[in-house]
Image (cartoon, rainbow, N blue to C red; front, top):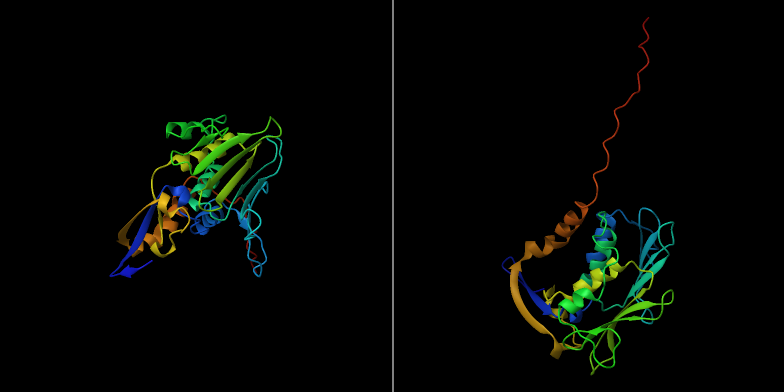
Length: 254
């Protein structure tokens, strides 16, 4: 970002699904520092692996041009079947973060049978003739629920006519509905997202709105720390250590 006298220039991009990937640390750092996910990976390999404290969920970021870069898998447990979610490399991190922030929220979801289509309908998304789901008003992003119970899948695809698909996301049918709803709420959110002006995506440029602003450099530098603090505050406070009941042995005297 270009810096001048303590300020930097930011680009604000809307719609957010065309903003490009952004900084992966927006997702991975809070998972580790605020939610306690452990990391274990070979530092010589270009991938990140994070595992939840209960060892049931794993996030893998693997820069493979032929596969989704982001994969989140939850193992089957006594309460729910296993599920998986994947996101392409150019998926804006704000959209992935909507999923992981909801996943790690210790509060129970208000509605575990939420309809993922509801936030999109409220934002004016509709169903074109060639689609089984809903498409954004500009026709760039579509969300579909395909298949039958037990063999179903949710898909999100962002594409423009003049270029190949920009990014895709897939959710197995057993993925909790409130997690998919978190993604669709983020998709429907008209709030622009900030990016470095030098890294504005070239794809879909004629479909996006871009404005710039100057902001204090300190605010940009501390944005991730503020995010980590806010998410960490959601976690329950660890119980205080019980007072010691150890009784020291009597002192020996001569």
